[in-house]
Amino acid sequence: MLTSLDIENKKFSKKIMNGYDSEEVDDFLDELGVEFAKKQKELTEAFKEIEDLKASLEHYKNIEETLQNTLLMAQSTAEEVKNVAKQKADQIIEDARASSAKEVASLDNQIILKKKELEDVTKQFDIYKAKMESLLISQLELIKEINKNEDAI
Image 1: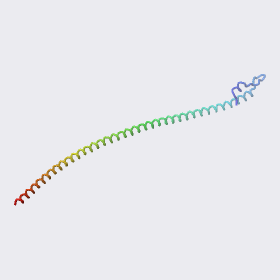
Image 2: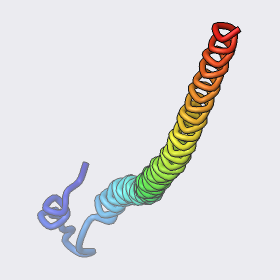
Image 3: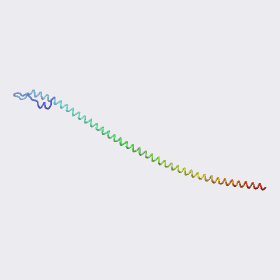
Image 4: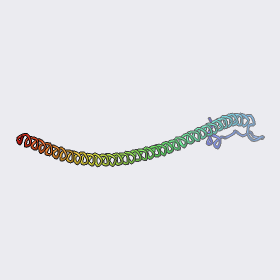
């Protein structure tokens, strides 16, 4: 493989009349052409490989960007789901508290009504008891009257 130094240092033998040996110059130029063709082919292949690598790099950058966007979207969606779940949980708790407050109020009203019914029944029982006592006293007076009338006869 020729180097730039080889080309720089190449010496051709001189012919007395015609200058450099044309055969030697032609052989060197042929060798130089072959080497140059090889280098040009290697350079072309290297450029093609660089282009392929750039395309692959661009492809992977696009994939990375897509993955990052997907990750951000997933994080955002997770946050939204979490917020919606928290709102639903808060709403359920609020509804449960309101429902339990209504139930407590309803039970309090029922207790008040039952206490009132108990007071009414107790009053009615006291009235019934007083009437019964009055009836019994009047019956006892009647029996005493009957007994007095029988003793008098």
